Amino acid sequence: MIKQVVYFINFCAEVLVQFRKIIRRGHVGIAVLQKQILFTGIDAFTIISLTALVIGGLIIIQGNTIFVNLGNSSIIYTVLVSVVTRELGTFIPALIIVARSGTAITTELGNMVVNNEINALTSMGISPVGYLVVPRIAGVVLSVLPLSVYFNIIALLAAGAVYQVFYDVIFLDFIFNLAAEIELNDILIILIKSVVFGYTIALLACFHGLQVMVASTEVPQRTSKAVVHSIASVIVFDIIITVIFYFM
Amino acid sequence: MSEIKLSSVYIRNSEKELFSDLSLSIPAGSFTLLRGGNGSGKFLLLKVIGGILQPDKGEVEVNGNEVYNYLASENTTSVPSAFIFQNGAMISNLNIGENLMLPLDFHFPQMPLTEKKKKIEYYMKLFGLKNILNVRPSNLEPDILKLAGIIRAFIVEPGLIIMHEPFEKLDDDQINIFEKLVEEEYKKGTSFILSSRINRKLSNMANYIVELYDHKIEWSGTIDEFRNNLILND
Image (tube, rainbow over all chains, first blue to last red):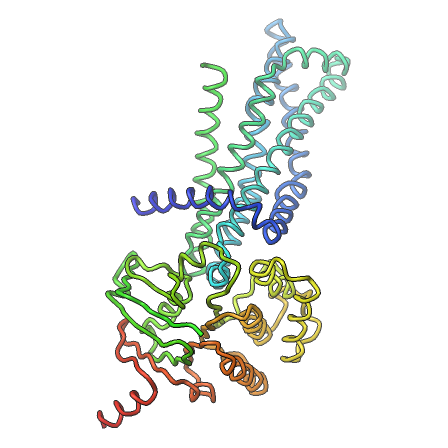
């Protein structure tokens, strides 16, 4: 266990060292970065859209019933900002990225270890951390950020659409009321959480992938560990960032 | 030409000690044959010499450079060694062309693209390989992957080429071309280390022998010393 922690710390340090060399290695790392953005960012738009539509719509349907009974339906805007913008707008995309990209990264790197591909890179003098890990982390971070912003926009627009269709609230009124509720901190929290979540998910996925030693049977074991650690880390960082932003 | 020096190398994994105080010196310009039974530590020793595995203790020098740190420093001016893996070890998410371009891009960023393509084309022709540059490794036969792995090692013109079971999966014609290539490069001054269960013409080219037994150097010396040793033991 202690050896694992030491290895993880060394791995994080190596990632930082290699990040500094990314510009020098640009000509060979850029293709990896592009592929990562394509897979993590662009290919995930469908599932992100679907989830955002459902979340936005459901909050209105569930929330409106409660708040109308309480006699204060305008509180729905506060709830939307609190739940979607401050929490689920980054948390749900992070979970989707763990499930889609985190598992894919761990499996891919694990299989590369088994097939001697990591050894091949090292033997050529190409740092596997520099060539494989750094572009993947950069790719995931650059994908999570626009995906989270997109999730927020779609979820809030879906909420507005459902509000108009089912409860006859004019869409433009909904937008103005919502805009009045959103503060600068809410925008900032999306940016910070996206970067922290993306970095953590990709780092842990790569770490566990490269922890595979020799056998392909280790790959699913490592993948499941990467998922558990990523979700746990996202929850912990989510709490920490929320506490820093809204309670301090 | 590369001189190889291992001093007091110590490696252990989570379960046991693999190398303890292993020292070895191979003269520059040698064609070394690495012998030893299954599980004697041949691949491990090759990985250490190739700078793939950093020993827990001890030093590994190839041509005067501490090999692991030299590789990690990403010095692109010279390539100390290249490795031919048993399975080719092509990067699976790159096609063959990209796989062969990768070490060239990395080590020779200033080299014009046309020259890089010419180099790749030369080796493709040499081994009679056609229309595989745009194909991913998963769609190719093991012998083609092996040849691609061989080309990847030769294409960067390293001082030392480490060959782990290079004949496996190849047919006789492919082996003949490969052996001729090795002979030519050896004459030009490239050092070689060969570890193979299959005895071919190349094994007879060896002028230095290293024998491993249970992760220890059982014997090492020139081919003449090896023959004398055999005669004495008989």
